[in-house]
Figure 1 (cartoon, rainbow, N blue to C red):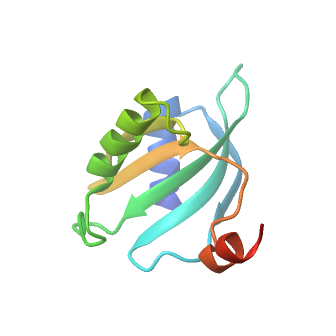
Figure 2: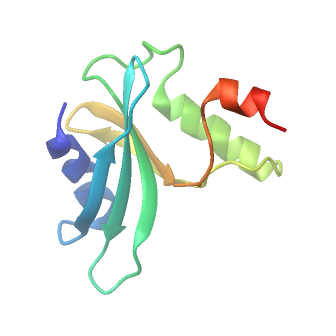
Figure 3: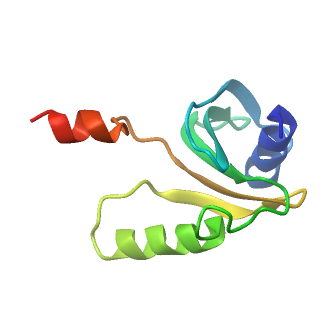
Amino acid sequence: MSGDTVAAVVAEVFGPQAALPHRVRLPGGASRETWALDVAPPGGERHELVLRLDSPGGAGEAGTTLEAEARLMRAAAGSGVPVPRIVAAGSAGGVPYVLMERVDGETIPRRILRDD
């Protein structure tokens, strides 16, 4: 996959005039791509987001679909669990995706478990 898929998702969700002033592929993730994005819609405020992409035709390789993951995260949020807000979930050019707000924090388990 490439930045073209990222741009397609942003255009689908925010419109074709939305700018991508920042995008970087994040390390990790064996079966899905993860990107940190800043999206600036025309006349709107900048959004700091995370985009997760399945490989084309590979939905469910990681144990569940991204669509199901988005539904679970929305349900968790509705029950008061602190999770990133899902902005959109769907498929762009046959590539399933979930787009969510970016939350600052740590995701390396050994650091989380080792530190107080």
